Amino acid sequence: MTSTTGVTGTTGTACPYCGWPDHAEPFQVVSRHATAAGSTVWTRCGCGSLQVRAVDARGMRIMSRSRPADVPAPGGR
Image (tube, rainbow, N blue to C red; front, side, top):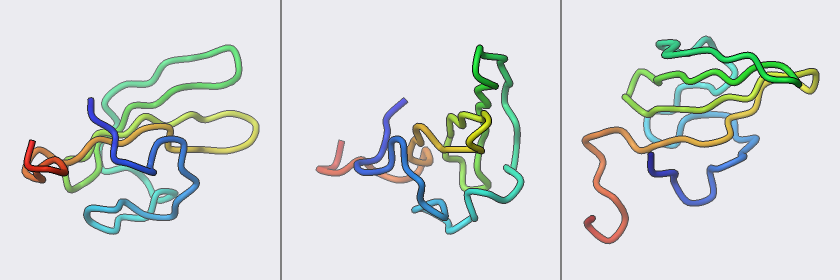
């Protein structure tokens, strides 16, 4: 998975690709895994961006986010 620059570990408020609010219900939950501190939830945004969310006593944070499949990488890769 390729993260976007400046988005890993973000406390941002919305998907940089489609604007879907980060704290809204995800479009699709791909998987959920228990951790010692809470859980890790892999979700897919409506635009196709895959996200890793950490959920614990501090709340929910997006830890990493990929580009949607149809968005070219910076530099054309």
